Amino acid sequence: MTEPLLAHATERGRMYSRSVAEPPQVPSITTVIAQAQSSSLGGWFGYMAASALAQDPRLAASLGNAGEMRAVIQDASKAAERYRDDAAQRGTRVHSYCEQVALRALGRPDRLEDARTELTQHGEGAFAARFDEWWDLYQVKPIAPEITVWNSELGYAGTLDLVATIGGRLCIIDFKTRATDRDGMVKPLDEKVVMQLVAGMKAQESLVDPHTGSWEPWKYGSDPILLAVAVGQTEVRAHRANPEVLREHWFKFCALRRAWEAGSNAAVAGRPLLPVPPPPRTAAVGVPAAPAGSPGSVTSPSSDQASASGSGAADQVGEIGLPVSSTGS
Image (spheres, one colour):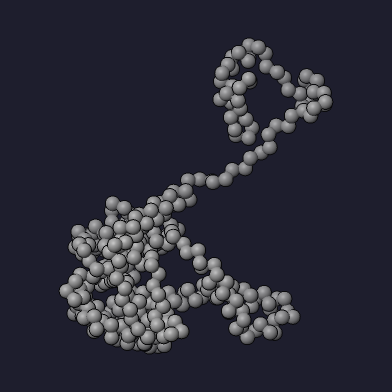
């Protein structure tokens, strides 16, 4: 898969610039969607760690060795991260193959054989075989693979996997590499892909040249079919985003974009928590006040001083940073 030249990894997530000579300005579509974190991942992380621990061949020998046991547990705790990273690399290889198929169909330079070989070397050749079957069955006519788009009004950018026609209809397509379940079926897609597709449809510009920073009006946002295609080793299954729910998913994406901006602003606004010292200690009941002039005594202001302060006493600030109310309030 071609890495978008205008995409940058930042502390605020993946962001896009207008050209290779400019700094990043807006978040990527996936960064915006990532603001909606899944609450179900905690159980999955725990399961992956427990599974890795149970399958570790060092487990039995480490039972009587605290140091060895800590090493085994530490490795098991990273099982979910390793699985995630492996899945991301596999997804990159599969996406690269899909892109090369489209480039060859367009008569552009491609690396199709290299991409297929890379999949085969990783034991993933079935992904390519199933994708080829789907491509021929659906008679895909590619228009623009890996096209970068921009929306200035809301402020986001992204790279779409493919714009194509299928059966004479314009389609915006997003490929998702999926594992296979116990029944040999490709696993279901995450419904957040609808936000990803509708955000692509709502683009206002598409990239022409990343080096010169030239863009053109978005030509493919008028009533396209939005397709999420699950690419597996046993099958490839295409799903259409329901046109009846696109409005709500667009509104959700807009809300997440505002959440991203609010979070970014809060992160640089300054120190969020400040220490508070205790208030001045007052004399306990029944304990005589210290004589005037002695250490710890407090001298009362004269009547002239008190009148000079007037109502401004209400604006005084106590030692803990809170307003001090005036006498009699």
